[in-house]
Image (cartoon, rainbow, N blue to C red; front, side):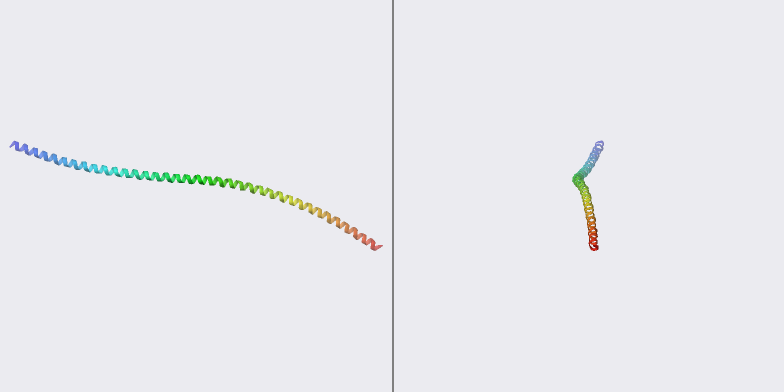
Length: 137
């Protein structure tokens, strides 16, 4: 009977060991699935972040290119603006010089015409005086 009890205990022990081994195998399998799932999620998140980083880098490079182009355009605009301001100043100076020259010429002509008018008036008075003298004689 002792042998039977030992055999029975052995069988119970073996059955219990098999059950525990089955449970351990199931737990290991679930753990593996969970680890694999988490690794997959982590890899996907890593890939998503890398993709977003690449997009951000490309967007930054595009913005830097646009900024460089805009700075070049601004520089050209500033150069053109400076040249136009210089042209305006030069033309303003030329116009003022021309106005001064024309005013001087106009003043000289006016003085010349005034002198001619005075001379003609003097001659007219002399002629009238002569006519009067001739008429009185």
